Length: 256
View 1 (cartoon, rainbow, N blue to C red):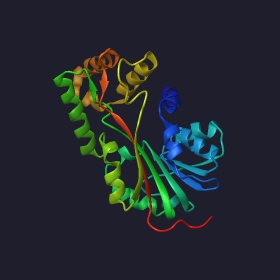
View 2: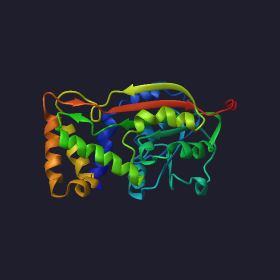
View 3: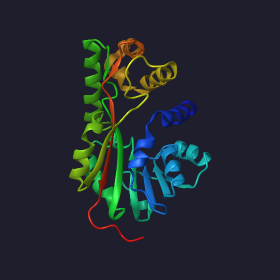
């Protein structure tokens, strides 16, 4: 867990949060729910911008790490599929960053999450798309990537193409879209060879993809090695993207 926590901290530095925060309609004193807050990096950023933030996550160890970081954020442990037991206050905004892909049935869940919003409240979604889409990678290994995507989606554990579907899912949940961005990302969407720190992070990410062992058997270590060589190649190209969508729930905002 210690190495995973270190990874979360590094990832926070590699994301283009500045562009996302600049696009948020956040106002001082607003209540924001950070759904899937993990170690609380963005929750603390939003609190520093004047919001009253409640971070929710189901991982006790990550929440303990978030609390240890300090900051003016309240953290609550709970199942994101059912927020009712948490008795959360009505929020002015929902922050949902790198959480959506874990819920392939996102639109129906978004509708339930929006029940915790004030009329006219905003919803910010950030999610990656096709993060294993890299070249150079030979045809058999590209097939492994596609089978991995399909198996994860079939099991309902992860949708690796969720980033490109954020707008459609948000609209299906009844949100009016106000802003969309495709964000640069040092780890998930970069061109050219990976620097050593990024390559190390990718090695850890690939080790955590246990489904590779199921799909490839004894060939899994070879796949991981070839994938990392591709990332280090001078001709490397990433097809992955990080998407941001800002939506607004129906109704007029409640006056402050």
